[in-house]
Structures are given as C-alpha cells and as structure tokens.
Amino acid sequence: QITTKELGTVMRSLGQNPSESELQDMINEVDADN
Image 1: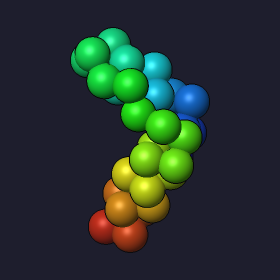
Image 2: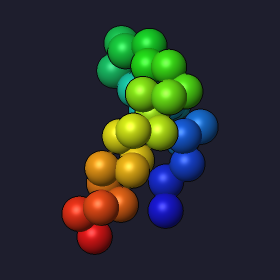
Image 3: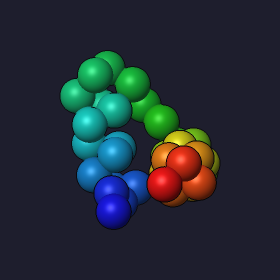
C-alpha cells in the first residue's frame, strides 16, 4: 500500500506538484483496481 507521502515524492521527482487531495484520488483509483 503506497502512502500519499510516497506517491508525492515520486510525482515531484517527475516534475509534478500534486496536491494532497489529488494524491489521495490517485491512490483511491489504484486501490479500486485491486
């Protein structure tokens, strides 16, 4: 299970600057697929 903190770190390393709510939405979508 990835956390919003971990995902945020990855996204920022790719040049993105997602908000906390955007990160949560992404994680929720991934969780729904599993």
